[in-house]
Image (cartoon, rainbow, N blue to C red; front, top):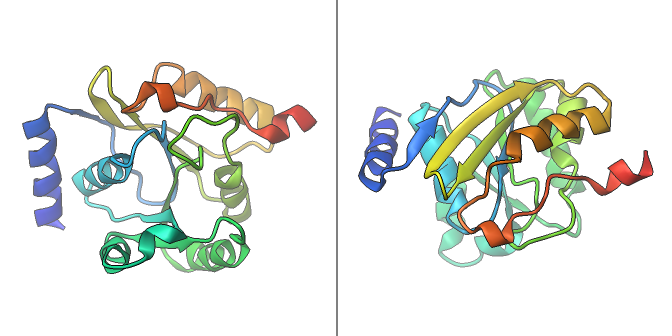
Length: 189
């Protein structure tokens, strides 16, 4: 872990990115804005700088060929977007068994501009009792890291208001691909 930490901190220093905050020991980590393939590397730099190795849900198609073993070695978990249930159930079981369970989720669900975020981070947090920590990357300020941590209240709109407030000035690596933090389910409340 010391090698990973020093490597991550060295890369951040060399590329002049400013690291803010640290990764908590347990929880659901939201990675946003998710605007580039570099976001996975950024998540690793944030985590490794804090001496942790989270698990990361990654689209199943990325695991084909030589990338599969590499992604698995870096904490990647293949997610079949058409049928995520079994993967999520396994993760929920694992969350209860491990003291240092960290799961990183790109709540936007895509690197392209979308209409809504996916609610899985709040659902998993509610089902496991784990807190949600808001991770970010902001290209214009060259800053990345961790923001606030909260336990979802069960009030979807209030929880998302907190999320929106934090991400209001975070733009990602490719700001034109940023999706505003809102859930389709909020319109149903």
